[in-house]
Length: 497
Image (cartoon, rainbow, N blue to C red; front, side):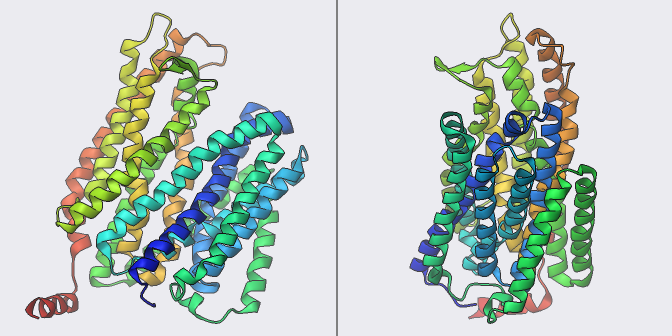
C-alpha cells in the first residue's frame, strides 16, 4: 500500500465523510417515511407494514458481507464503492417514479438493499487502510466518520418527511437520489486522494469479466430481493443462512489463524457478541421507545410543541453530533499520553450507559402527571445516555475490527460487523413485544406501568451484562495485546536502537 501524505490524509477523510453523509442521508430519509408510505400509498395494514419494513432492514444489513467480499476479493474497495453508490442512486430514483405501484416499489427496495450491501463495508475498509500504521488517531478518525452517519440521518429524518408532506414523497425520494449523484461525483472527482490505497483486488487491472459478472449478480439479487418482500418467510430463512455462513467462515478463520492473530480474532468475536446485545437494545428506539413517546410523553419541550412524537428519534443523531467531536478529541489526547481506555473497557462503559438510559425511562413513571404523562426531558436524558453508549460501542466497532483482524480480511469482517444489526433487528423486535398492550387500551394511566416495568427490567438485566463485560476486560486485553515471539524480538530490537 502506498503511504498517504498527512495533508492528503485529511483531505481524503473529508472526501469519505462527504460520501458517507449522502449515502446515509438517502437511507435514513427513506427509513423515516417508509412504514407510513406502505400504509398511505400501498394500502397496507400497520402490522404488514412493520413486517415488510423489518424484512427490508434485515436484507439491508444482511447483504453487507457480500459487498465486503466483492471489495476484498473481486473488484477492489474503490470500484465496489462506486458500483454500490450507483445501484443505490438507481434504487432511490425508481422509488421516486414508482408511485403506488407495489411491484415497482419492491423492485426499488430490492435495489436499495443490494446497493447498500455492496457499498456499506467498503468506505469503512478504505478509511482503516488510510490510517493504517497510525493506531493513535484511528479511534478519533472512526468517531468523526461515525458523526457523518448521524449528520446525514439527522438532516434527512427532518427534511425528507417535510418535503414529502409539502410536495409528495416522490420528490423526497428524488432528493435522496440526487444526494447519491453528488456523492458519486465527489468520490470520482477526488479519488486521486486515495490513489494506491485499496485492497489487493483493487491494485490489479480491472477485469471486465468480473465486473460484468458482478453487475449480473446484482441484477439477479435485486429481483430476488424484490420477490422476497412478498415472501417474507424466505427472507427470514435467508438471513439465518447468511448469518450461519458468515460466522462459520469467521470461526474457520480463527481456527486457521495462529498465535497473536488468533487471540485478537477471538477477542473480536467476543466483542461482536457484546455488540449484538447492544444493537438489540438500540432497536427499541424506533419500536418500544417510540410508542412510549407517542402514548406517555408530553409532546412539548421548552414550551415548544412537538408536532409528531416520532421527531423524538432525532435526539439520537443530535446527541451523536454533539458528542462525537468531544470523544474524538479525548481518544486522540489521552491516546497520545498512553491513558486511553482499552477497546473492551469502552464497550463495557457503553453498555453501562445503555443500561442507565432504560433505567431513566423506567424511573420517569414515578414523576408522571395525574393523567399518566411524563416530561419530555426524561426522554432527552435517556437518549443522551444511549447515544453516548452507542459511540462507545457502535461508533468504535469498525475501529475494533480494523485493529484486531488481518488487513486481507478486513472488508469481509466489516460486513460481519454490520450483520450484527440484521440479527439484532429480529431480536429487538421480539424484545419490543414485551411492552405491547391491547390496541383497545389507550389510557396513558394503563400503558405507563407496562412501559415502566419492562424498561426497568431491561435496564437491570443490561446492568448485569455490564458487570460480566467489566469482569472480562482484563482477559480481553490480554488477548488483544498478546504478541508472537517474532513481534517481541522485533519490539526488543526497536527498543535497543
